[in-house]
Length: 410
Image (cartoon, rainbow, N blue to C red; front, side):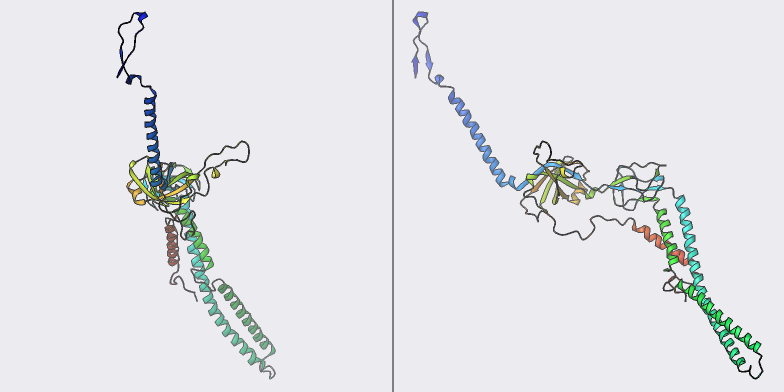
């Protein structure tokens, strides 16, 4: 359908022009259609988001404020010395008990030799005491015989004095010999008792004098062995700062060992994300190092006992001055699968993204039982004491002569 528009005759225009009615529709109809499309998209997006939240999202808590943590075992010497050997470098793998650094052991060798001689002398001296007790017993027996004889002489002479067969002077000499025999027997018994006190209720190896010398030797041997610094655990070397010829004092950090098979992740969740987190819940993690292609699996091991600001060097003083509310974060520890760590090793401080699966209800917010065994332990230093005991036994055995360790000496 067309309409005609009569031109203004005064202007001298030509014939009337036909105009389409569709071209006269107002522009508001297009705007309305665009708004309806936008509204439909928003509604569909909202429905999609709600569907995702109720079906997936509400069962997960995620954060990318998470970092790899681990034990950093600092290697420090137990005794001082001058460095003569370095057996490890940054990045190297070391095993528990492996030598890392060696000190000059000249002074320790001298002290050890003196302790060996002291123990050998103590063993021989105690052996002499045992012999003195044996000799004292024999001396007592001889003096008892002499006393019996002197008593018989006095008794025999006392009956003959009245008849004049024995003079009073001879009887006096007999009585003097009797008194001397009694005094000699008493002195021998006293000397034997004094020697016996030194060895009573103890075997040779358990004699206090021998034990003191053995303790001195054990200390000297430990000081000698401690001039060789060993690795307390297996792991990888980091922060090696010891140098050849350096004079080291006890307790000086030499290097660090990091067991990468025992690392964990500290995920810092916002405080409003902790409502449904529980111990033991499964966790999936991704590292910036490997990207989305590698997924780590773990379990929620512990929830921090406070926010990061609570344990900072300068904690927040919210009760003074102006106050601005800031949402706090709490560190949550996630234990990782050791097999996955061996296949894809992580480094301390790497960034991680963490996704906690809330379908698993877990088993509480706090552990209910105390640990019954040490969380970390090492047996690397046990061999040192065993070596010391073996050396002590050998020295005692070498200085026993015909006597054997453990005999009473009687």
